[in-house]
Length: 412
Image (cartoon, rainbow, N blue to C red; front, top):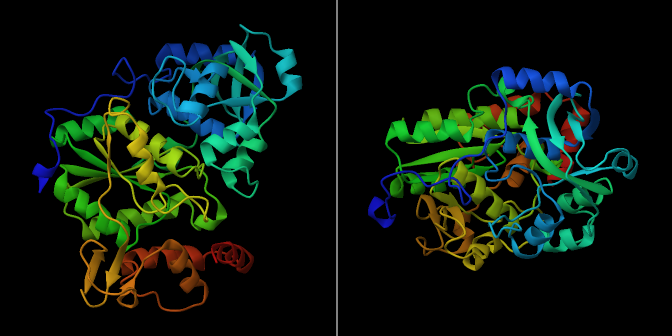
């Protein structure tokens, strides 16, 4: 089966013209000097989304970016998925400030970037440009909607009025290394792991929730045709509709891998971003940074990075057809259409392999699992493994009644 995938003698190159990782995180004496200097600088407090983007630039996940985007990059990315120099990039990576802050900072001046959640100084930036954007244009291009109920649109609309651009010196990885010491991995680290395993074809499975049977099925198909799989889940913020925090997702995935995957066939890791829910555009971003992590393929499933009914179920697969072959080295792995458990087949299947009618099919989904839990019913093992369910039940049992009602009400 592995002959189906074109095998190269080495890992894919990092994204960009230089074909090498570009981490902006300082270390050693240089880090200590910059931290000391940052104490005297004007401060710019950033949102969790902006902090996550900054950390990804710090660890090289957003290679080849060297800082937050200027106007030409912003416009090119929104309109054509291209930076000003022609490099493929699908979603704007920007930071914003109030008009008052913008008026007090001159071009060429350095600012200290501070986490709005922890008040830690996480970077310094030399401001080379200040500009305003057409937020409606960005939302239409990136999210395909201007509906304020869309969480990504709301994120853009709520940004401060002026964007700052300029090169970064990253001073911290925030909470992630300490909170997730076993799974928080940098691109340089996953690449080293893959090399030691002798892998050159690696499929990434993007997750934001615990794995149900459909996720497991997709991962195992990828293992059959690639050297291995990176099970890679988000460690940043989610909408309440997604149900469980990253720490619970990490435990649930770990249990599943230990019990149901052959040892050495997959790597479990997390990355420090918030969800944007940009559907097809976010799938492209997932491809860009998975290439930086060393993956040759990205599994694109149903409603990848979507929410509610803003995107068609397979729009994230279709958008890759519009990307030129030389824009990315990573390739989409469009393994199957809809995945489900078939009662007559007595196993996981897809519309390509199962001839039976929809009444014979059970489609696993996180929303359905949360609904069943909320009603105190038994979750069928065809939805999710019992060991994963035990982790989820433990989490929900620890919530207050008010917290539980909120989680379940937004999940319905």
